[in-house]
Length: 455
Ligand SMILES: [Zn+2]
Image 1 (cartoon, rainbow, N blue to C red):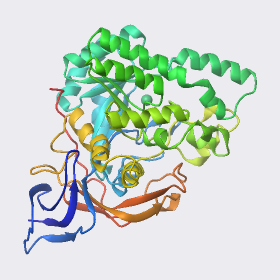
Image 2 (image 1 turned 90 degrees about the vertical axis):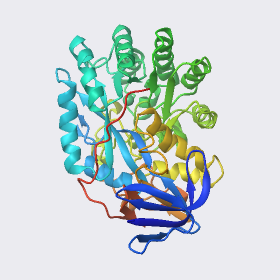
Image 3 (image 1 turned 45 degrees about the vertical axis):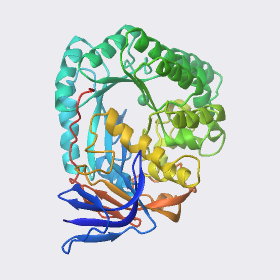
Image 4 (image 1 turned 30 degrees about the vertical axis):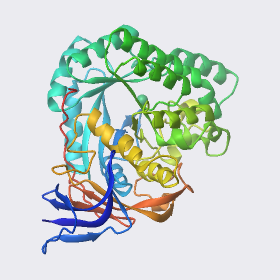
């Protein structure tokens, strides 16, 4: 045996019990009482929780945007992830118009092989769904991808899918054992508001929110759900931020449709108030953060099981890049950070009694593993699973500062937020990659996770 984690309280989506964990060759091989082995490294987890590492199912690392790219690349993004207890990421790679899906995927995989500090896989975002792309989706599924994404927005940028194309992609994904994710916001209403606001000199980041209020997202979610139910295909709504969209998803789920919703920590913690004050540009993301009714609804959706996954949509930009839009909100690169904050935040809420630790493991780890085809390798603590483990100290308090984060970004929207309880160790396939605020991993350690088609 290589490693024994002793006396911790193991938490999975279903159970909470005290036991030792034995690890060999990166896998959990024994769970029991009083494990002992002379050549194993011993880690004492008395009074601490031992959790499966989180899976961040929505990241945008090194994502190109006009002439810049998101501020965390695969190295710094996965380093930060590891330091927040996340041991696997699913990164959305963007097939550029005219590019083959497999070329996009292979290029990004090569980058990850050099840079990633934890395990990774991809979802493929399609920007020009045409007969050739629809055909090529099959090869991507064989490669190990079981989720594609299209945009309902970005009509001006030429990346929006019309409803017919959206339905074609939904049907094709289902045929291949994959799921289609849609970025659900209505571009025509956004454009209408934006033209009006700019003409009136309304340029403050507050108008980013005003141009894409609740109804902008709700209409698109309802339309996507309507098509998915009409054609009986699976659907994934990433980064859900609005109450009425969730109501529609809940209704369809109650009728038995395979529709999954994901929300993000920033929608659960902040409200649209953030767009009124100094620093508002740093919170600009799409969909924007909504009002308190939506926030309450998202929390209730998590408890009810209608929000299945919490992931970050991590897509940070540096201060000077965010500031470039201070005189025109449309010039602010969209995206916020969270890759190092998601698990600590959700676990802190559990520690304070808002929800159970099991529920946090479910939405941050075991559901993403299950729905994205890599369970039980990932997402739980069981014999034969990867030893992606987090030791969590419920007594440790932690205040987020840009200087105690491990990403490349020079600021954080989580600055000053205090967590009750914090991860103190992260293991990636049995290797200690983070120990008490220090990153110990190495780039190139991460492995590609080939995912199974939906069963
Ligand atoms: Zn999106």
